[in-house]
Amino acid sequence: MNEIKEGTVRDVYRHMKREKNIAYTTVSTTLERLYEKDFLNRGEDTGRGGTRYVYSVRDIKPKIAKMFVDEFMSMFGKSGMSALHEEINKHE
Image (cartoon, rainbow, N blue to C red; front, side, top):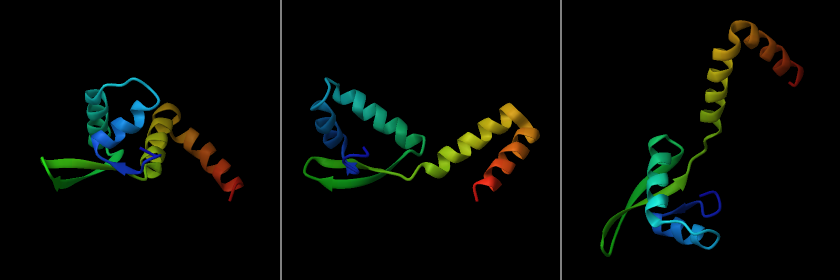
């Protein structure tokens, strides 16, 4: 998705098909799952043949940062957070 920025399942499928043998249903399922996990945006486009979803890239850096902090805290607790805070202050 980063290369095409926005597209339907068919657009993404055609783009990926150039480099590897992949099934249309695999692309469709993967895009749906990424949308459900808030890694992609999804809108609707009505055209010939009905309504179809248009997927686009979402800025996921804040989500990944939160996931990192949550995992870090579960592993190291408050002492780890103190050490991380000190390191962050060194880089400011």
